[in-house]
Image 1 (cartoon, rainbow, N blue to C red):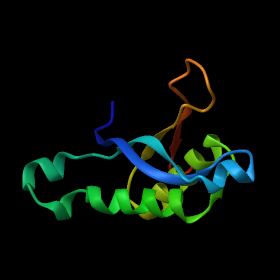
Image 2 (cartoon, helix red, strand yellow):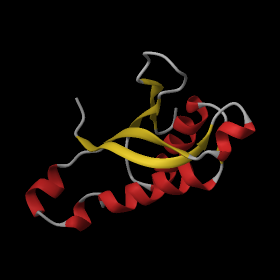
Image 3 (cartoon, rainbow, N blue to C red):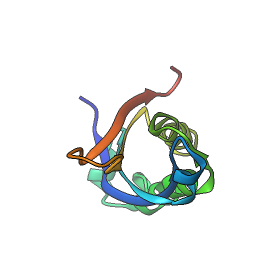
Length: 120
């Protein structure tokens, strides 16, 4: 099992939905992100330069989520995973995207979890 940097419970407003009206609402989505990377050097050095700055990861997620319209949670997850793999030295990334109360009823969240790795 690889080491992971975790950002869980990230809430970011996103233009997400199949219809234009839904995308205009810019409702918050709930995201969990795991970045796979060997963290031994950071553990030994206790220096931010040996790891990945959580704020930089958050900023990259926010830029994707807020920067364009997304019809599907699958598309948003794929775009976030691609951006994180491009921007940070990680072996793989897992992204979960949940949309709260997607329709009236008893469903709390609907979403996806994807894992993408470098070179695949």
